Each structure stands twice: as C-alpha cells, then as structure tokens.
Length: 109
Length: 115
Image 1 (cartoon, rainbow over the protein chains, first blue to last red):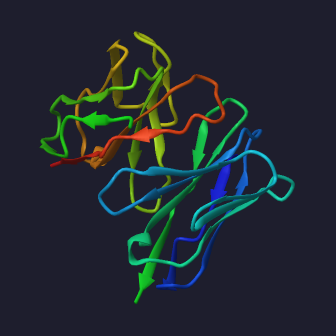
Image 2: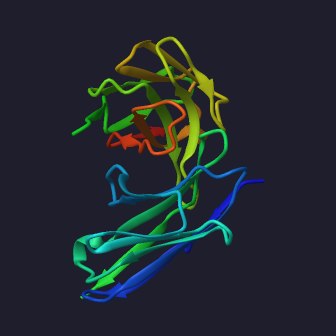
Image 3: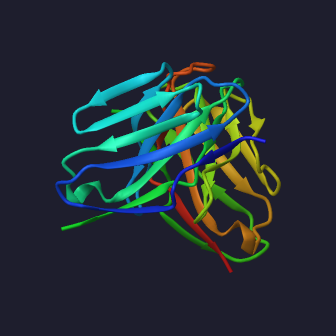
C-alpha cells in the first residue's frame, strides 16, 4: 500500500530552527509537496521537490532524497506565525496525491 | 491570486437530509477536487474532475456524488447525510491535468456537522 509518515506534533522555540521529516512509500513518484495549514484555514502551498537536493525559499527549505523515500522541511528563524500544521504529500505515478496526516508545529516564546 | 470559494463555512444538518456543498474557482483551472479532513488522518479524496461534466471517484466516494456543469463550479452532494460524514470538507483546484508541478489551491473549507 501507499503510505506517508510524518510526526504528529513538534514543539520549537521562537528564533530557533526546526526540521519536519516525511517518509513515503508510494506507487511511483512524480514529486513531493509541502503545504502549511493554520488552524481553521485552508492549506497553502509551500514547496515542491521532484529532484534530489535542497530547495530554498527564504526562511523555508525543503529537501528530497528519492532513493531513501525521504523529505524534510526546514524552518529557520522561527516566528510565532509559523505555528501551524505542515502537510506532506506525494504525487504517485497516476498523478494522484497521497497525503500524510500532517505535523502540528507549536512555537513557544 | 487564485480564489477558491466554498459557499458555506459552517453547516449543521440532520441525518437523512440531502446536503449540497458548492465550490467556485475563478482562475479557469481544469482540475477540481473534493477532500475531507479529519483529525489524525491525511486529506482523503472523495471525487475529482478534470473537465466539465467529467468526474472520477477518489478514495472514499461512498455516500457522495458530484456535479460539474460549468468549469468554474464543482458541487459535492451528500445524498442522505449520516453522522459519520461530520467532517471538514475542502475544495481545491489546480491548473493542469497530469502535471506534476501544479499545486492545489484550496478553499477555506466547510465544517459540516450531521446530527
């Protein structure tokens, strides 16, 4: 079967760095997405990786290793507004998205 | 910016009622999707559509149907609401079919409670 695993909850301190991991087993691979979802709001697109390596976008970076079925989202200089759930999703060979359950990130002052 | 609008933010319905959830997108996207989101579970795909009058079953279509009469509008129908359909329903759209780098744009969700 297809499976996406990510931690349920993480806590970090304002100003620090946090890494949210995502491992996957899917039927084929056409890329991995990260979305951010604040409580009570819609998910919003953060990043897309299809090739191995690190993609950087300001304070956020996303890494992919296809051979290991592994990705992480790195958040630097954490701000209180980064408190949200972070959703990992993989696009399989049929261009269907398989979603993880999400990681709730709590930022403490 | 793409705007995906869901007609209701909160709905309370009784068991057995027929429920309509409406979704409209304003960017001429080809693809539209209906998901439900429940605590501890990933987003689960109910139905999707790649074109007008076209629909495909997702992972959990039982108890639901959809309609796409116009490109911009995608409706989710609960034929006879049941308590296990209490959930957050999210509509989404994306630009291209079979495109690996076509992120989803989500509406703000409809929180449906069935009593």
